[in-house]
Image (cartoon, rainbow, N blue to C red; front, side, top):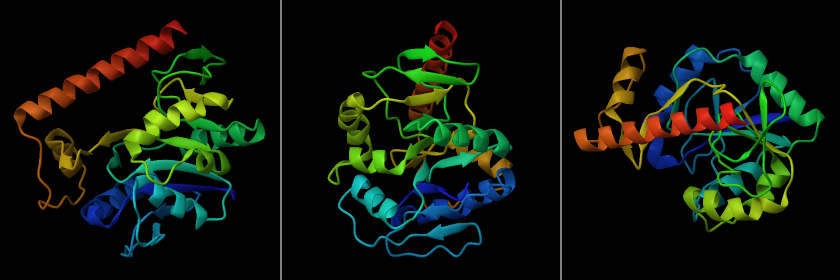
Length: 243
């Protein structure tokens, strides 16, 4: 896995998330063999597990990621976010096997997360996305050929704009896949800048240090998010079952 790196999309204002995030990796993915990079601006996180890229000023999420990708030598990247905390042991061997399959077969993208894109099952583990489908380029736990990702990024775009406009740009590119199950157990701790209190409570019970600096969802927001999450899980399960 010399040619693969994991990049955690972040920035300096999310510094409060870095310690519990590192703790979740140390607890649940301590056998990871690829380097882990934090896409920070000016700050350097004191860590034995994470390497701070320190890309300095940025104009957008995409600009941050472009600069981060250009600072590393690896040709493949596993992309994730600073608010996706691990909650159970990651099967590192299975992840590495899938990455090796992707590299050997020259796949451009594998999402290690059950997708709601349209497509078809190719074996018991992998689902091939259609050329033109929603969420084809979803960024959650996405394994990319770095040159393809760089080609799709436009430096002025936010992460949400990339998943919409970048998705349309991806329609001309073949070999986008997802796994048929969620390969990496995690919880989305922060949504639109606020803690999901259910996730926050779970992470504290797992022993992670959570700062009280950041605001949390109220009751109505929490219920609304939980319902949306359930809808996604049911829909993705049905799509994989049918296809």
